[in-house]
Structures are given as structure tokens and as C-alpha cells.
Length: 139
Image (cartoon, rainbow, N blue to C red; front, side, top):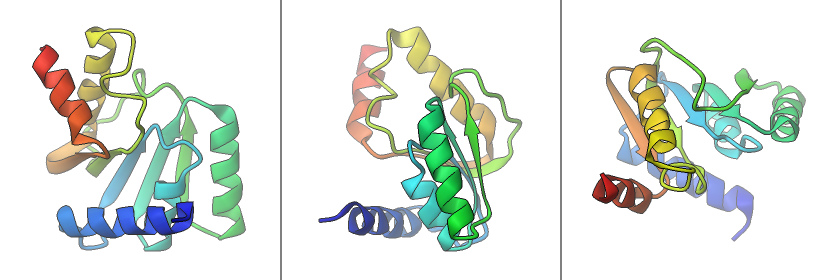
């Protein structure tokens, strides 16, 4: 399966599982080169993607511009960014984040960002619930 097909299926699944209506504001943490952010933007969602790697953010911005998509990309460490209950959904689709950082304190910073970014009643989602279980067991 191609990256495009895989991304489309993942976004379809997230829309169904999270019962999204198309009006939600989405934050995509550790967005990489923006494949999920871009696909949600293609479908009309208001999306912000964040990644620490400048080359990924540059590529994502180029794709968004090429497709005339309204999506915002920020190059920053997700552990240090702050929001104030701005998002309906926070995605963490990156394999190498929660549970894989240096220590539990660093992992906790991501959970803190998610909690602060979500509006009341907002929905967090991770591509790998096993990461969340492993992290919670270590607690």
C-alpha cells in the first residue's frame, strides 16, 4: 500500500472513530512532512502541524502552497510549545514520540501540551495506543 493510500485510510478511520463533522480545529503533533495535516486540510479541516525538523516543515509548506491548502506548519519542539484550549482534536501520529523520549519527564511534557491544547471536551488521538499503554504502565 502506498503512503497516500495509507494516509487516506488512516484519516478516514480517524474521522469515523472520533466522529468528526468537518468543522473541528486539529493540532497534529510531530507532523513530520505533514501527510496527515495535509490530508485533513484537503478535506476542509482547520489544521496546524508541528515538527522539530526544518526540512519536514519546509516540505509540508511547499505541498500546502502547491495545493493551495489552508494549513499552518510550525517548526518547534512539541515539548516546548504552548496553547490555550484552542483545538478540538490533538493528533500524535508519530511513532517516535510518547514512550520513546529520554525519560518519563520528557514524555509527560507531551501529555501536558496535549491537555493544554485541547478545548473542553476535545479529543486526543495517537496512532499507537500501545505507546500510551506502555507509558501508563511505567507510571
